[in-house]
Image 1 (cartoon, rainbow over the protein chains, first blue to last red):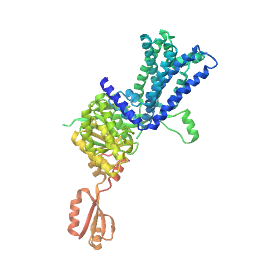
Image 2 (image 1 turned 60 degrees about the vertical axis):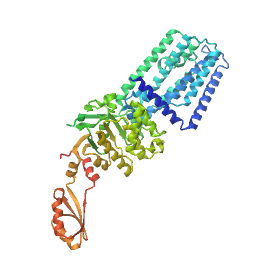
Image 3 (image 1 turned 45 degrees about the vertical axis):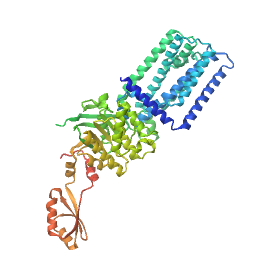
Image 4 (image 1 turned 60 degrees about the horizontal axis):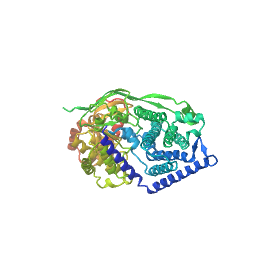
Length: 264
Length: 331
């Protein structure tokens, strides 16, 4: 793979996508306001849960806020990259414009995963990091090298798992054509990631760890931030992320063999 | 000797297609127990195309023209048979193969809707690994050929269909491909835009010796661009050869409208032995075989007092229409 070419193409993706989005100023403004209101609403909801009870699943409100911060960062990444690109796959397949992607001398997964960005998602990412730094101060977390390394690894793994889940569902469009509902179901499950895993019953914990790995996406990185995580959990998250990423790649390469292109 | 750039042998393609009965009952049945059957849309076809050739694929809707084109460019996997395009197996979509070809579809677009076309051109240039200087040079050259210099900086959504199609062509040709697959490129364009596009394709073929495979329902596209046509009927090739030979075979006679100076001459002409289509006062329309036109006209001009005459070619759409509904044409 020619890395220089891919960096050059990605710069072009960024430029054209930003230019396209900035054509509609009001839309961006509405998206920015929605991101702020959504975060305020989520924190308010979380505070209601903790109002009568100081602890939920062994987590204090200040600690649970870290999960909210990580969720906000991941949701921002979803809104910036995954949502605009991976929902576009459905459009590409329904309208047959995936033809143009497949006939370009560039990796098709790279193209359809990164071509678009939604700049308003950036604010959500920034708000998430802001909340995270606030939580670090409130919870008096010591920022050292091992902490920063582990938190970066787990956060990256969360991004990879989330991407793979989105990509996997979007790829099934090649057979089922319409998969909007499955994506909405995934989004609903991700909302659950705003709460500590321990606050759910045992059976739900198993479900959210094994079948839809929400636990890996938010809870494990949060535990790293609080110094509660154990090494095997971090290793497990790395393995799960690698497995998801490889599977999504293999699945895409398998699926495009079945692409029949829309009739003209 | 000109080499074959496309070689297709015993190619077939089948699709699994589901059918649904009408009404609520049919919908429920279709939802719970979808019945699919394998439909062979391309049936054992073979042909070769030489470098620099322009070949028109003719056929009724659903005959299989687009499926053939999509298999040639590597979008669809063939079910049986073999395809070699420029020495590559298309469905493997190797980088060097993709840099050699392009697909243009009249009803689908790749340009970024909200931005001026120039942005899409530079994006494509980076995908094809062209440096900025080279991209600029090619954009300048192609935009001059296509006469769209000013439109490069206007958002695509504000361009007319003709301007958009020209921009689509530029986006698809920026990497200077050797093989062009064009699926109804003039669809929906007005007469002038169609003519300009045809002129451009002719010039591009002449200057670059690019091979062009074209499907179109506009016969003017076919007659002005293609010397050779491949007619497809229900997934099989019904004719593969020169277009003029096909036309001669299908319309062996020409109609000649003769305006005589007097009605008496018209009556005499009517009884002279030609096949008469109709006669109105001093005007008479006769049918003459293509190979005897010169001698017949000589006889008429020598024996009758003629005011004017018109030779009518049969409408090409009508002639080609005959091909599209027949299974086989041996010339």
